[in-house]
Image (cartoon, rainbow, N blue to C red; front, side, top):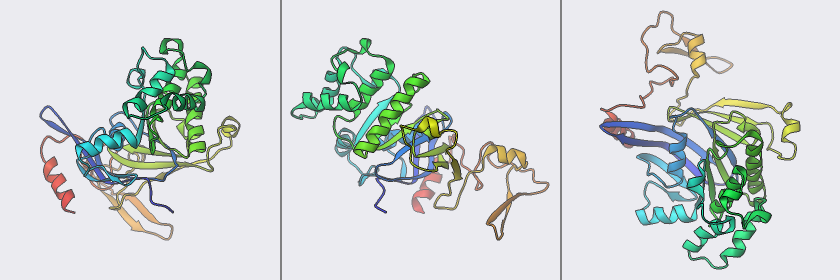
Length: 325
């Protein structure tokens, strides 16, 4: 297998809000192969958008290792990070105002990033990209003349203008109805299939697994589980196969041997803090401790004692220990 295009190892991101330090990513680990079409899901505040911002070069990680197409994002200079954003990453946002310039028509919007990059023959390439996303007949229409789905397809064409290595889409269907959202998913599938474009889609849509080949769930700043489908998505038959398609959710084990136990499991077994682990012929057995009353963390926690997402004191000491490992 070739080297993954994205490698995150023990990735940490700390934001400072007023006098508090917020740990948005807590040692997250992730690998993505070139050409993957992948979904990223998680509750609000889980860290999924922070991950996208790190991969896109919009924010710097605080610690750990993150490689994207051979670029170590923790070590890039400011100038190199600017070049990385312009040449390696395409963005599609949920809000149209972040994607497009309202007083330009579709083809002019797609031309803009190429013009700023000093490229030649921008009009021809812009027209080709709009044809790829199915808007050949709408390329001279301005944004008020385009539907929400058409505007998002223009945004996808804009994101492809500078031939990125990866495409990052943050809630691209969040403001669209289900039928229009399906057209956007089909556009991503077509680009992935025909261009081999590595695509990561952040979504709250519980049905995203039907539209991608792998879904990674993030909980409390870490990858917690991964859902795979039985075979690669076929956009032509996705509806017909939906009733017979099989998905499997697997818990992710990080390099330190840690895993996250779903909250429902903890509540069902009344696990509040410590557990007993035994090696059996079938695998590793995790059992509650009778009479255990000391709660460690709380909520959806890791088997190892988790780090709170908000700690005004002690984060720097914890981060220093991580760097020293």
